[in-house]
Image (cartoon, rainbow over all chains, first blue to last red; front, side):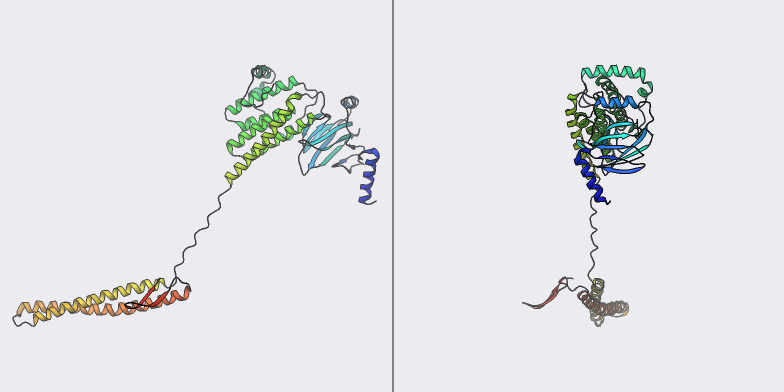
Length: 135
Length: 304
């Protein structure tokens, strides 16, 4: 399966309503729209998705006792700030952002321009997750 | 609640809040109240508001930071004020503190003509814009009330103006720092060839002319003495004195002849050689000889 076939499959999945879900296999590198995730098994990025405040609270309660994973976020060729679950988390490049397992609402923006937004699923097993956003 | 300009305007409400915040700070943060925290940007960037933040809590913390920054600015330490505000801004995720930090960085840069400081301020203002635009969207947590909704739009305007004015300041400093282009050193004006020969020739010709003068003087003097000696009443001591005078006149005449011959011959030769050399080395109009008929016969003119 060539590179163009991957792209076609990705576009088809988006058209069918799967909205760019990228499942990162074990220590794999997977890219969606303007964002790449390198992570251990089980990490998942759903581009464009969002979570309500209620969902965020529910996820937080559910996973509060679980071990955190380290997330680092870099922006390739630009700048931007990172917001996780509705809060300012820092300005890229940031590393060692500790996230509990479960779903997290993430947005990366440069001023009024949204560089990437979606829902990151952090696996239960603690792992390092690297996110690279295209600037 | 917060004055739009940290350093120059304070409302009475702001003063009261500041007093309360300062009092609280003195009780709860004795170490911070006496010394500005050192900046650890790497750590600061990781710190973020973890839980719910109310407007009043954020405002109190902001007032405290602004008060301390104001006193630092008043004691002409905008750099320390900028560092302190930056640290607090990262700690609290407060967009207004980021703008204050940007203003302090700009003040520092303006004072020290330091472009890096101004650029740092621009980055602070941009982070502030990131947060403010985020707060305008629907993803911001309803529990994160770091500023009131009504403050968002004016703060965006303030941050954008700050970015613009900081960019102008950078341009201004760059213009000041731009070294004036070194003026090309004037090329040493080359003397036209043969100048030395012409000068030497002229001097020798002058010496020759002086020799002719000396010859004339000696000859005239000699002739005069000779006329006196030829008179019959001149004899004895008077004759001897005139004889000595005549000999002296002859010496003058002979020296004059020598000088005239050597000076004129050598001077003329050198002049001719010099003019030739100049002609060869500089085939231009600078050296031009012109032979033209005039009313009195022939005239020679030229520039050298």
